[in-house]
Amino acid sequence: MQAAADLINAVPFWLIVLVKSGIVLLVVITTFAYSMLFERKIMAWMQLRPGPNRVGPWGLMQPAADAVKMMFKEDLTPNTADPLIYKLAPFISLITAMGVFAVIPFAEPTGTGFFGAIGDVNAGILFVFALTSIGIYGISLAGWSSGSKFPLLGSVRATAQMISYELSMTLSVIGVLILAGTTSLMGIVHAQDRVWFVIPQILGFIIYVITAVAETNRAPFDLVEAETELVGGFHTEYSGLRFGLFFIAEYLNMITVSCLATLLFLGGWNALFGLTFIPGLIWFLAKAGAFLFFYIWLRTTLPRFRYDRLMDFGWKVLFPAATLNLVLTAVVVAFWPTNG
Amino acid sequence: MIAFWVLALALIASGVFTITASKPVYSVVGLLGNFVVLAILYLTLQAEFLAVIQIVVYSGAILVLFLFVIALLSSGVKPFDEGTNRLPRVLIPALVLGGIALVTIVFSAVRSPSPAQPSITAGSPGALGQTGEAGVFGSVANFGQTLFTTNLLPFEVTALLLMVAVIGVVLLAGDDVPSRLQVRERGTEREPIVKSGEPLTR
Image 1 (cartoon, each protein chain N blue to C red):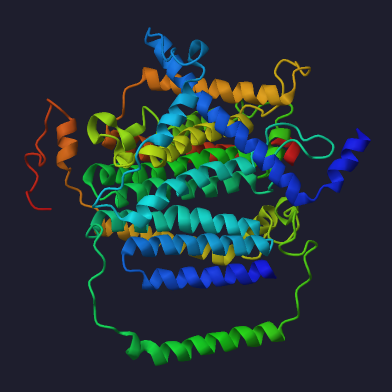
Image 2 (cartoon, each protein chain N blue to C red; image 1 turned 90 degrees about the vertical axis):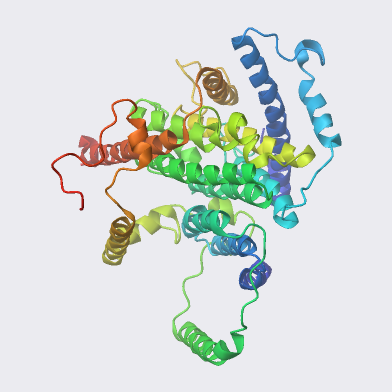
């Protein structure tokens, strides 16, 4: 063990970060591919269909087939599009979606600090919010630059929806920050060693779950790409690999908010019922996976919101509820006996 | 130091791009780049909270609204109309004012005692991961401490100013006549907009 620690200490810092980034990138992209298959399978079973089952055993090679198909499709740019922005937008979406994984801690760091997160940024949770707030630009610019009406409508909806729900999402998380007393994601998980924040912050958790679905533009909040009204929404004109980038970004965002829910409310890698012999990483993945399943479950169960109701719900229900949660948490923490 | 020069040049380049871009949306993208580079510059100065807030507030909220309005109102993908070139008229005042500002900054920078060097030199590897324990300059804890103790009054006054602005917007934009949408939502039990007995004009 000591030899291993010495070995890791001898390696330059940038090399460690590079290796860690490579590993996380590989894992995250694979997770994306299989979460897509997972979603199609779950949806199929819920609708009494077999789902994809032709490529490989139980359809397990389906993601590879899809990726190859995506790469060989023609990359179209409409005549009316603004070529520069049109080409830039998918990259903004993907880079911000991926950048978030730089600060997400997946497990308890070992003695050398090699495992855990790529970087344990002190303002970790704020960093995540900063990056996701830039992610809006990908969708917004994509819709504008396509130069046709459906994408523009989709992106205008997206912008309004994401701004509205981001506010409640941030407010719902501040309750957790007050309880934990830190903005570091590692610190937040450590603060949940005794009790998960889902118990004292149940209102915050409910608000977080709803806003997380809305932020990632998933059903029942998928007004942004509502197939029945907007063709494909903001990515109507995109094809081939550029469409693929949006697709990856959407699923990565889903994985991100699942990881965040796990870290902020579900105790991160802390074990349940004292089952500590199972490694923390497995616990983390199980919780995030359960949250992903919940996402898909929602999609197959609930019909889509109407747009004005979506806005009303966001501003008149979620926002006051999130504010109430924040005030309650602050008051309770301030007057808690042990805090004097 | 290399990081500073690269970032500073990128900052100026994106700023110039913002004001010279041919289409409004290009300007927004230029400004977005400007904000992001500025945030990275803050990061190299250990001010991680400021960096994050720079992104969340300016890029995440204000600039998105710019883009929203431009996307809705601007004439699609068409570039700006060629206007009269106003540069010659404002050139001399701009240079004078800019010069005064530069001299002031340089003068005060020379006069003021140099601040204590942060424990980690800017731009060194690990600066990102190791900053920001409580009490370190620029950390979240320290920022909050300052905001709610020494700078409480300016903070509250700013909040009040914003509140006044919000009330003003509501007064300007608000009308108390129910919209058609609300009437439609009531469905079958449609009520008259103006109840009998009320005067028609408000």
